[in-house]
Structure formats: C-alpha cells, structure tokens
View 1 (cartoon, rainbow, N blue to C red):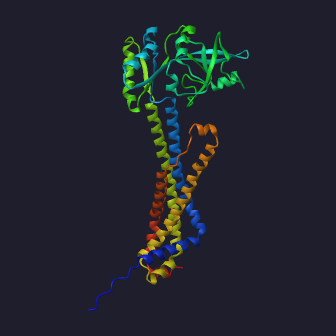
View 2 (cartoon, helix red, strand yellow):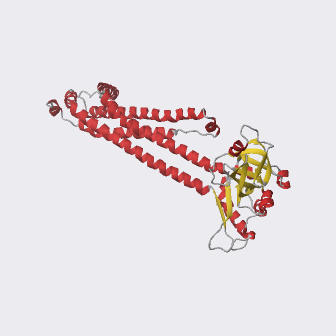
View 3 (cartoon, one colour):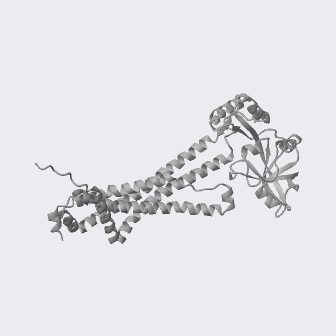
Amino acid sequence: MVPLSPAPKSTPILWAETWSLALQELRTNKVRAMLTMLGVIIGSACIVLVVTVALAGKRYIVGQIEGVGVNLIYGELMHSGDAQRTTLADEISVADIAAIKAALPHVAQVAGTHDTPMTFVVNGTSRPVNLVGVTDGFQEIRRLVIVNGRYFDQDDMIAHSKVCLLTRELADLAFPNEDPLGKDIRLGDLHFTVIGVFHERTATFGQTEITQNSVLVPIGLIKSYTGEDFLRTFYVQADRPEDVPVLTSEVAQLISSRHRAGAEYLVRNLGSLLDSARRISLALTVLLIVVATIALTISGIGIMNIMLVTVTERTREIGIRKAIGAPHDAILYQFLMEAFLISGTGALLGIAIAVAIPVVANIFISLVPELASAGVHIPVSWVSVVLAFLVSCSTGLLFGYLPANRAARLQPTESLRYE
C-alpha cells in the first residue's frame, strides 16, 4: 500500500493570493471604496476627538478648581432665617483661625478675609471697588501672583500700614502707562500707598472675594475704618490632599465649639467640586463615545451594503473560482480582507486627522503667551487611538462577515449560470 503523501501547505499561498485579490478589487473600484471608507474615517476620528475633548475639558475644569487654592478648606458664618439673631460673638475672628492652626494637625496654612464695598476715585470719577482686608497666609493659600512690587510683610500687618495691592486691571485703569508703585490712591475718604500689583493664578470670575476691581489691605485696617473686627471667610490649607476630608470635619467641630450652640457655620472643601467635575466629564465622555459608536455602526452597515452589492456583481467570478478549485475559506477570507482593508485604512486616516487637530492646536497655543504661560495644553490619549483602530476594524469585520459568508456559500453551477 502506497503511503499517502502529506498535504501541501497552502496557507501562505492562500493568504498571499487572498491579499492580492482583495487589493486588486479595491483598486478596481476606488471611488466606491473611498465612499464606503468615509463613514469609518468619520467614526474613528470622532472616537479620538471625543476622548481628547473630554480629557482637555476635564484637565481645564480641574485645573480651574485646583487653581483657586491647593488642598483648600473654606468656611463662613451661615445666616439662616430661622436662626436666632446673629451677634458679634458668632462672627469668626482672627483668634479662631489661629486656634485652628495651633490645635489641628495637618494644617499647613490659615488665612481670613473681610471685604467691604468702597468707591475708588480716579481722575475725579468715582468707581465701585471691593476693599478686601486679608491676614497672613492669604497669598500662599489663594496662590496670588505678584506681577509688580511685593506682598504685605509682617511689619505691614502689625503696624496696620496704609498700604495696598491692586489688581492688574485696576492698576491699568488708575495709572495707565505708569508704574503704580509708591503712588497714592483714594478709596472714599481713605488714602493708601500702592506697594504691589497682583492677579489670581486661576481666574475665579468674581465668584470669590477677589474681583477685577479688588484692593487688598492688611486686615487691621478694616476695623479702623469700618469698626468691624471679624472675618467673613476663612481658609485652611491641608498638608496633603488625603487629609482634606478629615480636616474639614475637624475644622467644623472646632469652630462650632468656640461659639454659642445656636450659631451655624458652613465649612466645605473643593473635593465635592472636583468629584462633580470628574463625574460630569466622565458622563460627557460616555455620551460622546456612544455618538461615535453610532457613527461607526452606520459606517459598518454601509460596508455591509456595499459588500452585498459587490457579491451580487461578482457572482459569476466567484463561480469560476470555485469551479477551478477555490475552497470555501478562500472566498470567505477574500471578502473579509476587503472589508478589513476598507475599515482599517479608514481608521488610520480618521486617526491621523484626529491626532493632527490637537497637534496643530497646541502649536497655535504655544504662540499665544497668555495661554502658554497658563500651561494650556490639549492632550492626545493613545489609548483612544488604539481603541478607535480596534473598534473600526472590528466593525468592518463584523458587518463584512455576512456578505463574505454569503459569497463563500454560493454554488458553482448556479454562479456560472448567473447573468
């Protein structure tokens, strides 16, 4: 008995032939392939851009919140309609924040403010401003940037020196094209000497005591001119981010213990805002990815429709190939390869477009000094790039399988009779 010889290894030849036939078919129908590819390009670009926008938005929002203060806890006296009448003893004092720093661990810095409206006389014209009395540590906690001059020193605070700091906008208004340092300004009936110009590291858009028209003075001057010796808002800076939740509770308890039982105080931190920002960012990311997935699904349906039409048009060709010995898998793989080439090439083009947009945007950002100094940068997530490619290719293969399987199941005799 003659032993059977092993079957020839045809897999490499099969794959090479399949690849060649798939490329040949796509080159023959370039316009059809490009139009089919367009949906994949849009869908894959959407996935990358969606994640990029979500990351950039999240980074910006979190940066804005963190820029208000690092590891920040803030508090104030609550004014409730059903509470007893507020007395001076209920107000937060400088002694209260000193007690917080002395009694509680993990406190890096404390500060307090008392703001009151004033009028700023510029060239004989009155303008409303916000006079803000501040304690030691306010610059460090609120991360104020001194663009000209200096901040208050210990002597200014102790001696209640009649000195002040102006916002950059107010300094430009009062002293256009001049150096404001050493100049005298008038707030109502009061006179101050300008020793510095500042701005917030991260703009709070008037949502704190700092506005575009704010004037900072030592806290002791507020009592001298208004008779009010208390703090409207206090700030506590924790050593580490993980200490903030526990320290917030401890600060609230300490403040309450130093005042009468009927007084209520609002003590919060930025953790809830950060968590909210992250949740909103995640929700938007999921929503936009769903939209991108719908776009890819539509493009997948387009691939399936075009491939079904292609199978119908090439029925006679399929019959000839089967008649000369092409196996079921060869036909199946050829049509799957065509679907993969359409979806894969579309994914690469879409990803290239999506990556190019933030790269070009970052170049323009680097040319704008204000944005560059603020550290504005649009990130590109390489995870989203890989995800977009895999999802796009998977979509093409998934929707290309039905027409590929239909082509592979055609009978040679029926295919050859097809006109």
